Amino acid sequence: MRYFILAFLACAAIASCGNPLGLPPAFISNVVDTVSLYALSGTPVSLPSGYSIIGQRAVRTDQGLPFDFAFDFDSTGQAVLLPTGALKMGKQSGLQISGQDFDSIKIAPTSNYNLDSAQVVDSNRVLILHSSTVTCSFNIPAVYYAKLYVVRIDTTSSERRIDFLILSDLNCGYRGLEEGVPRH
Image (cartoon, rainbow, N blue to C red):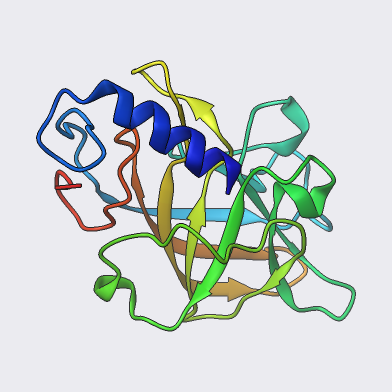
């Protein structure tokens, strides 16, 4: 919550536009991307297991690149997404299960994110995520938001993979989760 308050105060200080937060107009279009991640355990380390919201890419977790969540299977064989806190990397990123359809989610909420434990997921599940706090191009601390739809989970020993659709809003301070340039 502290990062949101800091981002809100910094964005309000900019006051260069006519919107309530004083944000400059959004200029980056939100697009839906298809991504595959491989389980942290039981797959070659050369395969990506983490995802960076701001980088909009799958990353290998062993290379020191920043990421916001990772994929694995828990001890009972259930597929899980892990925010950075669950990986003992600090409570930076977060995720939450949504009861809405992927296309129905228009704005990301600002609270109720799971920051420090694995979240069990299954096919057809929708989640809303936020990145760790970063300094955006307007020199303010910001969190970036995304929505995710689990298309398929492959539990076979050779694949151990999750396939999902994801839409990220990369406009500083914006929470819009519709395709195109967000309004606020």
